[in-house]
Length: 405
Image (tube, rainbow, N blue to C red; front, side, top):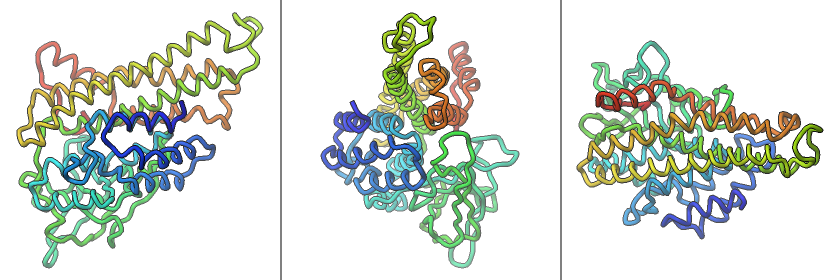
């Protein structure tokens, strides 16, 4: 089964328009499998998905979307990540914004931005900052201040994944008095600078660089007082975290695919091996079976978490978020990550055991799997999640509810 067929199969289980997407997916998969992938190729793939209406995947059918469930989205993320892990990562912040806007659409501002989603526009995010504040605490130095009849935005955001591909950027900020606010800014507005200066060892084509806002002019309807206009939910970061683990799962499936291809392609084996041909070697067969089993367990785990999250989000869309359902979804997402990061990294290393010395060549590019997994896993260290899960099991301490959990 080719990557394109796998992606189409993932979409077939959802109500999305597969007939329209199939040629788009086929082109994406063909480009992703070609050597020498570049940022321009990722941009072309993003544009293909945009044109096919993928940005509205999660909107209800009655509102011009596909009516897809969270497990549908996660299935497609896994399949796209198997083709190229950069691609779904670029779109992550867009789908996070869509969830926020959908549950907050009683606000005319969010309702208007949902119209932009329906029109095919993509949203990025300005959240993380460097400095001495605790990561994910919500504080920062980006400020929205009054200026003339409107406002102005100043600040610098880092790890701005996908902003270079976005039409709008949702920016977390504060007023000079310290009130939490947000702004939705057109990416091409004067004073907005998006740099592709990410120099990480993995996820190299996600444009996860620096976004600077220098005196960016804002109208009143582009500024949100978060406590008044956003509809909050418990464990708001669960989808963000599960989405990353789903990308890791897609990479793990690519590792299994490439491991099988390596074994099939080898014509010689070590003189002291158990079989002359690698494909007939029981030890290599066992190694491949373990990698494939890890990929299966990973997919099953994230889809189980996605089912729980979908149920929780439906209560929020109905206007009455269920804390117990959101807690369960957060628990499942966290438990998935705690186990799967290690499984995936181990599998990406075992890939070289089944491939021999030639697997380590630069032209093979197989090191990208380990580097991409390692980079994604580093977004949120496993140790802190494992501790929170253990403490909850021991004495009932609630799981952390803010960002990065």
